[in-house]
Length: 226
Image 1 (tube, one colour):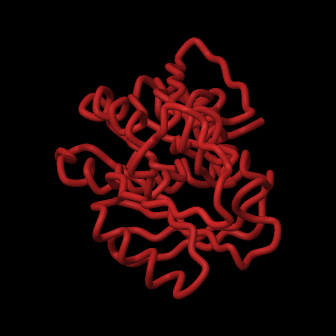
Image 2 (cartoon, rainbow, N blue to C red):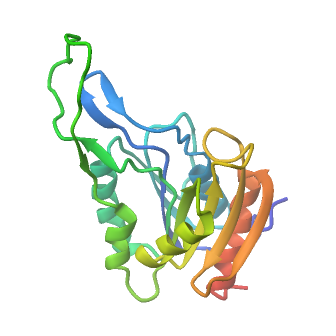
């Protein structure tokens, strides 16, 4: 039995979670994306739902199913769509978790017709998407608590700490492309949680469904719910 099934620790709290990848359209049949499966974000959504929370899950395209009477599932494709939906719900949430792997760039032009193969080379100009976590970090109100994720390959702790500050997070969850069995596509993950005081919690490789409750524990401790 998980520790929150019979607990009211997060009962009634409004949670906003972003999950999965985004797809940036090039033409009607092609897009640019990444390997995110959304498994960590969905595991967190399920953990909060089991704890009694009211969850809004804004999800990019994934092959996952989650249903619950207290779940508001919103499906999006692009980074701009995800930003617009977050704009509708961020103000009312008490806890926000930015787990989605949002595309940093999108094609400058989305072609209305399929691009035909012509030359031997093809150049694509990209423009930068808004950083969703940065934008909402700017308008975060007292009492709102936000958590970010940092997937890193080099200078991992340093980069995660910088993101914690730059994006006005209360906690950041670091994982590494260098860890076997972790990150995209796996049912397992290995994380380090860092708070604003620089304190670190290290968690060995575990199922994401189990790590979700470790993350809830950390949030509860920060909010002094336990």
